[in-house]
Image (cartoon, rainbow, N blue to C red; front, side):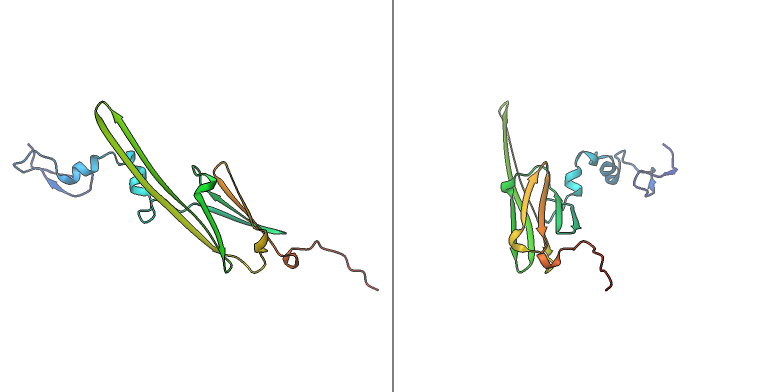
Length: 158
């Protein structure tokens, strides 16, 4: 056995001049295939679900909100409007049970999110509508008549 110091994966120096032939604990951890558990290490632990991405676009007569939320159903969403605050939320509860060869495996999960938006005064809140198709929640927020962009016109000089 060599008495040279080597540089393990974790970057710390390890002296090979030990009586034990066991690898360091840090080496065991470095060798774990963490890529097989991406959701465990990249999810938002507070909510169990990361916040969905949102696109907001203003057109001449409305605001369009698109939210990417694949894998849900229409009935999973709660959309509320109170005092010009629009809130979009969803809660999911899953429970799976697997009985094979005398073994029982039961897994459950809970995930939720909530996004809130302050609407401009120009939104006609009585005509807001929403639809859900192929993983995209689409909200159409029409503008009040006086806030709609009017087409340009030419004014003649008299």
